[in-house]
Length: 261
Image (cartoon, rainbow, N blue to C red; front, top):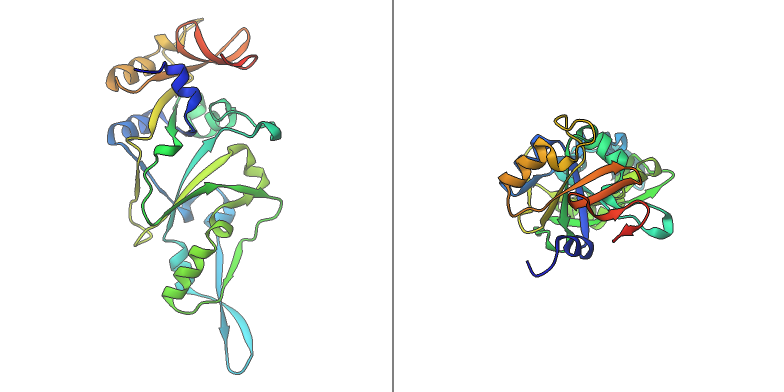
């Protein structure tokens, strides 16, 4: 390699996906990351949207009515969520250093954090990627003015930032970068090609490690290392000086106290 592992890690625009060990092996092997259905997301607002279209009933009398066209179109949008590095000005953390994400999405630390190069993600024409913004109040109901399917489809796409990239501040810890895709059918299984973008895997905990052993001695590290030889595997471990990110045993590339080394 022309550049060291630590230099490569520091220089890429990193995105992070926290998942179980089983799912991580499947993602790495297939080179695909599955989109989630918008109506099955953890956020109650996103999974229970109320959508209307603006109707005219004779003259200028206006009312709102729940509209099946609008609901059907909204449910076609699917989502992949990544964590990203925080903005130092906001005192947010580096993406791999988010303990909440390790706990909630990576099997309480026994899973894997997959690291992607943001600049190498392959998006389709029906995809859109952007940062999620966080607000104190986020509406759960949306009114659309178009009556035709095509008009409604175009209106939702124009308003995609408002509709799909705005969450309540309680989700701010995720530091989310999101990719959305409009599927032809809401139940279609959609996948993002991540073969070129997948750059690193990070492991944190394993039941096979005892005492003061390092994660380099763990079963999950060895399985990843020998199953996917071209994918660098890093360890995120706690020691005397707090958490550190290692590329080799006793060779940290980042610590909580010093940052990148």
